[in-house]
Length: 384
Image (cartoon, rainbow, N blue to C red; front, side, top):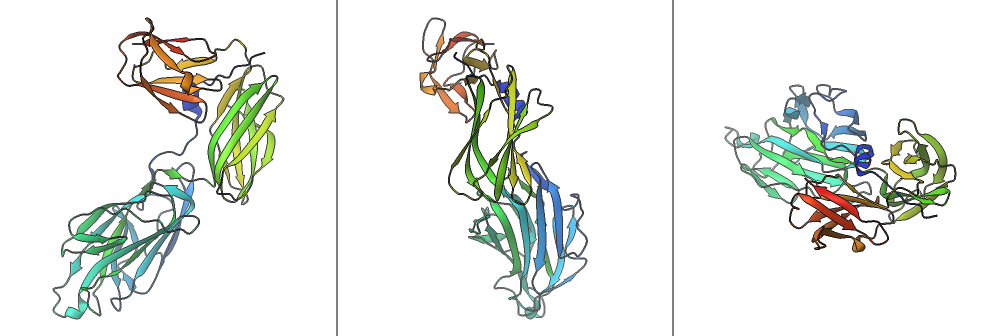
C-alpha cells in the first residue's frame, strides 16, 4: 500500500506557531511600570514567546530629578552627577532567553564646555557591551550621524546641542546588553550633572533554548513516524509529543528525553501506532530543566491512499509564486509547463516541512499550467 502525505499550506500557515515580530519594551507603558528612581526592575511576559527583561543600574555618581525614570521617549536619566570624569553608570539589560533583532535608540547626547569653571565641563560618552548566552561578545551596529562619532562600540557626543542615535541594532542573538554611560576627553575633573535617554526597545523574536531545525511526519503502513532535529540545545530536559484530531485539543502520547546541552545537530524520532484514519495533528512541547515549556509548530499527516501525492496552493495562483506539497519531495524532479508542454523556468524555495515554493522567473500569464513531479500525478495550476 502506497500511503501518501498531505499537508495543506493554508492550514500550515494558520497553525505555524512562530515568534511574533516587533516585540516591544515601551518603558513608559509596559507593565509592571518602572518606578521613578529605581536601580533595578523586571519586565515580565513580554511578547510571544514571552521573555523577561531584568534591568540593573550600578556604578558611582549621584542621581537626582527622580533619575532614572520612565518617559514617553524611553528610560530617561535627567540628571546624574559624577564626582570625576572617570566614573560611569552601567545600565544592564538581561533577557531570560536570547533575542534576535534587538534595536533601540540612544537620545539626547551632547557636550557642554562653556562653563565659567572649566572643571565642570562634561561630554557624554557611551560604550555598549553585549554578549550571547555563552558569554561571547556581540558587536552592535551603530549608524553614523550628526552630533556624535562612532568608534566600534563607543559613541562620543561631538555637539553642544542634542544629538540622537536613531537605532542601535544587533545582527546576532543577545542575552545581555550593558550601556556604560560616562564622559569623554573634553570633560573636566568635576563634571556638572548630565543626562541621556535609552529609547524603547524592540526585537524580532526570542531564541528558544531548543532550536528546532525541522519537524516532520510520515505514514508508514499503519503507523506514523515523527522525526525532528535540533541545531542546538540549552538546559533541555525532554520533549512531549502531543496529538490531536481537531487542533482544538491536544493530548500527550509520548515522551522523548532530550540530549540536554548541545551545539551540534541532534536527531529524534517517535512512532505513533494509535493514529487515526483521518487527519492527525502533532506538535512538540519542549520542556526545559527549570520547567519552562515551549511549543513547536503544528504539523498534519493523514492515512489515505486516495489523497494526491502532489498538491499546489493557492489554486488559483497569482502567477508569481506556487506553493507545492508532496510526499518525500524531490525538488529536482519538479517541472512546470504550459498546456502545450513548454517548460517554464522557476526558482525553488524549500522548507523543512516538505513544502516548496516555486517562483517563476517571469510572472505567469493568466491561464492553465501543469506541474509535474516524478512518481506523482501531474497537477493543473490555474493562474487568474
